[in-house]
Each structure stands twice: as structure tokens, then as C-alpha cells.
Amino acid sequence: MKRTHHIHKEKFRKSWRGYRLAPIALSISTVFFLTACEKSDQTVSLYQNADDCSKANPSMNQQCVQAYQAALKEATKTSPKYASREDCVAEFGQSQCTKVTSEQADILATSSTADKNSTAQPQQSGSMWMPLMAGYMMGKMMGGGFNQQPLFTSQSSTSPMKDKFVDATGKNYGAATYGRTMNLPKSALAPKPSVTKTITRGGFGQTVDQQASMKQGGVSSKSFSRGTGG
Image (cartoon, helix red, strand yellow):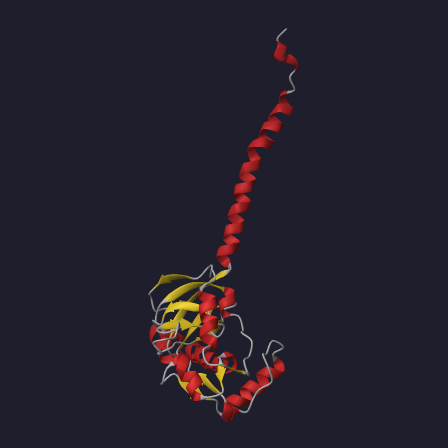
């Protein structure tokens, strides 16, 4: 009688199949994990104003106007504030600063009341200056709507923001070039805390420098096409 007669063939097959399937299951899990990571990114387009957006997307004129207006309001709430024009100009340049109006002060007052992350209670509008919104990034949400964030730039030769786009938190998004698209984490378009307290000259530039020294994973230029997509 052959010696292999007493080998439990079915048990052997099950053990072998279990051993072979483990790496396959691991590979499938890895694919799902990577897919989930990819879905966490969002494609955004960079525009100067609503007209810039509408020219790139003729069928989305209304959405472009709404996103631009929302970005302007967000810029009022979240941009750095300065006690004097000179402090603002030192960081952003001669033509990049504006005085906070009474209407904008009302927006700040409302936002600071509603925003638990607000940095402070609002000061008088006449004592504050802020940089002009230089552009905005706009991305399409899964529900079909759009979200947006204002962008700022500097014309000062000594500023780390010169000819660069930065958001209200000081994150750098590269050259201040309109019409390009980028892949960004969804957090890039998340609401930012309201800023109602003035900062000292050079304070925001230091924040930009600090952000630049950190790894900004997920921020990569995708293309230079001007369309947002349907």
C-alpha cells in the first residue's frame, strides 16, 4: 500500500489555498486604501475673478459669480488684518491693500460671533487694513455644488509671498498664475477661522515661511487647462 494513502488531501488543499489567498486579500485591501486616498483629493481651478471663470466655463456663469462673491466674503473674514496701511503694504505691496469698510466690519462682527475659532473680538473698522483678494481657487463638490477659498499675493520684493499664491493660513500654492488646476486635499477648501485681531508687520510673512518649511503632502500641479469641468 502506498504511503500517501493516509495523507489528508482535502486538509492540505485548504491550508494551501489559505496561504495563497492571504497576499491576494492584502493586495485588494491596499487597492481600496489607495482609492480612498485618491478620493480625498479634489481638483481645483485658480481664477482671478468671476469673468475669468465664466470665460473658461461658458455654461457656468451663475456658479462662477456665486463662487467669486463667496470668496470675497471669505477673504474679508479670514485675511490677515493690520493696524496701519504701512504695515500691510510692507508685506503685500503698494496696490495690494485696502481699508476695512463699515460693511466689511459688519461681516467680521457677524462671523466672529458665529465662529468659535475666531482669533479675537472685532476691532473698529477704521483701524484695520487687509490685503486685497488676488484670486481664488474653486472646486466642485460631490453633491454638485462648488466650494472656494480666496488667495493672496504680494508685490513686495522682500516678501516670501512675492508672485506666489497663498491662502489665509499662509499655505503656499505656487506661482500666482491664473487658469491652472491643482490636486489638493479637501481640507484646502475647508472654512478657515475668522481673523479680527490685527497683527504686527511681517507676522503673516513669518507664517508663510513656517508653512513653506513644512511638508505639504497632496499639493501638486496637475495641468494648465482653464476649465473646471462639468
